Image 1: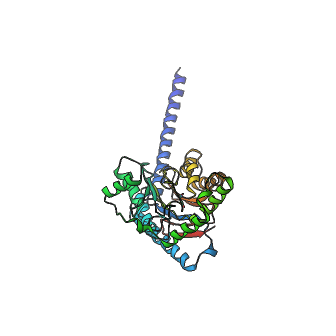
Image 2: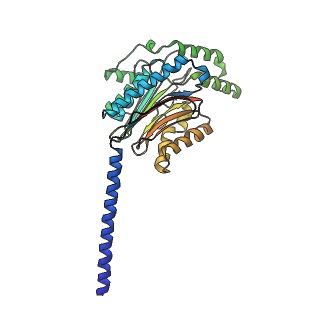
Image 3: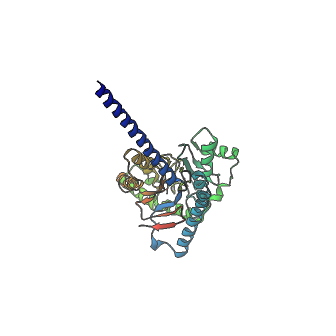
Length: 358
Ligand code: ASP
């Protein structure tokens, strides 16, 4: 009996010792992880994906795109370097691209069939999983700011149309006349698309449907903008802003303002913003799908983004791309189109800008 008691006590002591060693080890891992992530930050942006080919691009236009992408990413990078939040960096970076006529967001948005501009945007905070989105606004200069207001200062996640505009006025956002969004290029794109599509070619005849879709895609020229960022506190955020697709009708809304489709952020996984043929990004729940694969299948960001953009999205019939950053600062810029305007910058200020295929 004495022997048994002695054996039990020794086993108990050994077990205690083990547990405290494990605890210490876990504690160390935790500390190491925390130290690693302290001061790590990064930012990645896109300015739309599509048939962007070197042979169709003048040198001066290419320079203009590169300069604007650089200006945008440096804006967000500076905020992060100074200890600002990922959400703030995302919003301000997107503002730079919204204010540029080069992109299909804010000034320079594509035209609807009714020759108006209807803008969509969304933003998400990966720390709280709070999010805000707006659809079909026509007089808000920076739709991403309104999405931010919806997230921060309303009990809702998504607002649309006139109600959203009223909320924007109440929050004191900068409002503009609808003509502010006009650019000659985008207006001409609408006219040439309309010429190739008589009103009758819509949706009930298979051949016509294919022709309609081909023209729709070729002339859409995409150009949506998006940003994903990791701040020094380890928080992630993502946002997307767009005019949608040229010649859209019937109050069509794409993926950009749909949380989980065009935008998603979760500190556990990654922050993601998408661009491309929105209907397929909604059906594939693309941004969330990437996050879910990371969370449940323990895939890396690179693996999950590749699977969704190179396999699942084209299998469904869609095209486009994503930019994303994970909680360790790894970046992905995955697309299945000829090109995607894109840039990323790490905590050391290393800058990478791309336009065409890899
Ligand atoms: N995804 C956007 C939409 O479908 C368009 C784009 O990204 O170019 O509205």
